[in-house]
Length: 229
Image (cartoon, rainbow, N blue to C red; front, side):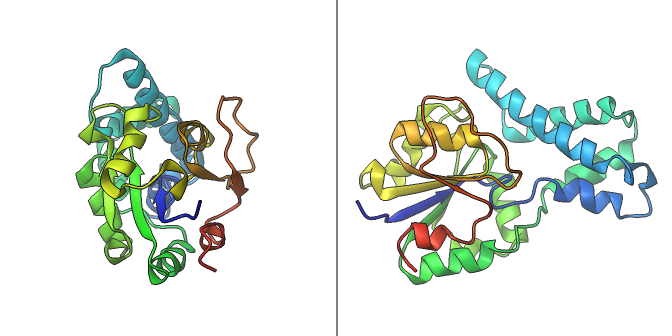
């Protein structure tokens, strides 16, 4: 069936999650990040995701801002930078101002010009997501920003993916769901969406019941997959 709605994960898909650590490392106030920012960014993202999965399994939900702070605290301790309050505060501030990947604006413009529904579906809390969307200059290119806070459980719980049809209607296979997380794309495929995995790092496919329908190195070809170019 034809694609009518394109839905995107936010962090790591539209927004560069390494941008906060990279930016802080370029600032003279934080010379200790010069050689460690990549490790900080990697550990931060790793623990952020792990904490969402663990909280989803245990039913101990909290908002994404809390797990973002918890993940950063673990990463800073792991890299020997814990206790540096100004650094912690700066990294958290920058997370509200994450840069979009370079191809994102033109890609979304192509979809909107063709009349496609566009939205974010993310673990992020509404305030975080809206801040990132504004910072990246994307408000006019998205029809909605859907957050797991509506259902109180993180991805990949099926009730999160239900939010898309509740908002846009139609059939599951009218939706192209796009994520940089292989597990997210796999879960959405098992749910019934058409899916694209943006595998920027060239990682192996996750061994999960669902499999992404498409694998891309960036978002440039999403309009083609959606049938608008």
